[in-house]
Amino acid sequence: MASLGRNSAKVMLGRVAAIGVGFLCAPIVGRMFDPAEYAVAVLVESMIYWTMGFAALGYAQAIPLSEDEGELRGLVRLNFVVNGALLAVVCVLVLVGSAIARKYEQPVLARLIWFVPPLFLVSCISDTAQYAFSRLGRFGVLSMLVVVTTGLGQPMQIVVGWLFGGTASMLLTGVAISGLLGAVIAGIVLIPLMAGSGGGEASMRAVASRRRQFPRVQLWNAILQSTAYSLPVIIFGIMFASDMATVGSFGRGRKLIMLPVMVLAISLGQVFYPQAADEWRREGSARDSILSTFRILSMLCVFPTVCLCYLGPLMFSLFLGEKWREAGVYAQLCAPYVIFLIFAGPLKWMFLIRERAGRFFLYNVLAVVGEPLGLVAGAWIGGTPMLRELTGFAGVGWLDGARAAVLVYAIAGLLARAPLVVEAVRLGGVRLAEVVGLVVREIVVAMIVLLPAGVVYWAGGPSVAAVALACAAGIAYLAVLYRREETVRRWVARTVGRGEQEEPAD
Image 1 (cartoon, rainbow, N blue to C red):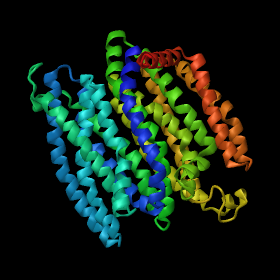
Image 2 (image 1 turned 30 degrees about the vertical axis):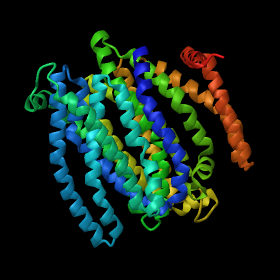
Image 3 (image 1 turned 180 degrees about the horizontal axis):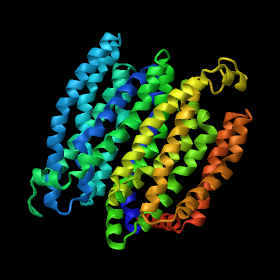
Image 4 (image 1 turned 180 degrees about the vertical axis):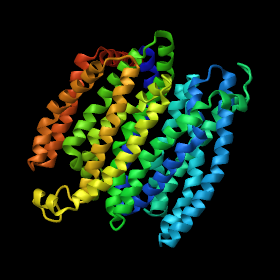
C-alpha cells in the first residue's frame, strides 16, 4: 500500500500540476473564447478522442504486463508500427468527413477536422510512452510528460488566441502545440531505452501473438470507452445544432468535471494496474491496492464533487465568466455520475488482471448504448408540455430542453457505471461494505461542512457569502482529514520538517 501511495503521488504530482496550470488559465480562456467557438473545438476533440480508442489496436495496454525488457521493447515497437498504419486510415476518414461537412454547409468544421490526424499521432506517441514509463517505474518522467501534454494546452491557447484571435482553430492549435512538445519529450526518453539490448529480444510478431487477447477483446473495450466519452458530445451537438452556445456550454462543463477522471483517476490507474496484478499473483487478492485506491480518491475527489453539486453555476460564473453559468448547471447535474467514473478509472484494470475482459466489454456496451439514449430521451422529456407545466416556467422551465437531456444522460451513466465498480471490487477480493464505508464517510463529512454555503446560495443570498462559506468548509474538511488520517499527518510533518531543515541559519 505504501508503494502504491508513493508511486501514485509521483504520477499525480504531474497531474495535479497540470490541473493547477489549467485552472489558473481557465478564467482567461473562458473570457477569451465564446461558447459557440468552443462548441466547434470540442466536437473536433471528441472525434480525436474517439480515434484514440483504436490506438495500437489495444497493444499499448499490454505494455505494463511485459515480463522483461525484451518483450517491452517488442511491444513498444509494435505500437509505433501499428499506429503508423492507423494514421493512414484516419487521414482517409477525415477526407471523407471533410467532404460531408462541406456538403452540409459546415465549412469551419470541414477545415478544422484536419486537426484530427496530427493530434491522433502525437497522442499515440504519448500514450505508448506513458505505459512504457509506468512499466519501467519511471514515474518521474511520466509525471513530466503529463505536465507537458495536459498542462500546457490552455497556456498555448491563450498565447495563440491573443496573437491570432479567439477562434475555434486557435483552441485546437494550442492543444496541438502541447501535444507535439509531449511527443518530442517522449521520443527523447524512449529512443535510448528501446535501443538497449538488456533482457534479450522479442520480435514484434512474437509479442503480437503472445498478447493477442488485447486486439481480440481489449481493443473493443477501448473503442467502446472512447465512444462512450465522445458520442454524447456529438449527439448533443446534433440535437442542439441551432444553438452552438448551448453545445459549447455542455462541452466545457463536461470537460472540466471530467478532469478528475482524465487526470487523477488515470494517474492512479497507471500505478494500480501493475501493482494490483503483482499483488494478485502473490496473494490471490488485490485488497491492499483497492482499499488504498478508494481511500486516496475519496479524500481527493469527493469534497470538490459535493461542492459542485451545491454551487456549480456560481462556481462557473465566477471562475469562467457569466456566459459560462449554464456550463455550471450541466456540471452540477453530472457531478454524482462522475463519482462512479472516478472510481471506475483505476478499478477497470481488475477485469484484465482476472482475465474477465469479456465482462468488461458488456459494461462498456451498456454505457455506449445507455448514455446516448439518455440524452435523446431527456431532450424529448424536456420538450414535453407536461414537464413545462410541472416546473412552472412554461417554455423556459428549469429542466427544459438541454438541461433535462443532461440530467437523464447522467442518470443513465450512473446506472451503467455503478455495477462495473461493484464487480471490480468483488473481483479484487474485497467486501463491498468496506469501500462503500470509505466513500460514504467522505460524502457525509463534505455535505455537512458545505451545507451552510449551499443554503445561502440556494436561498438567493449574496454570492460572496456563499463563496466565503465554501472556503471555510474546505478548511474544515482539511482539518478533519488531518485529525483522522495518519498518512496526512505524516505528510504534513515531513513537509514542515523539510522546510525547517532548509531554513538558512542566522
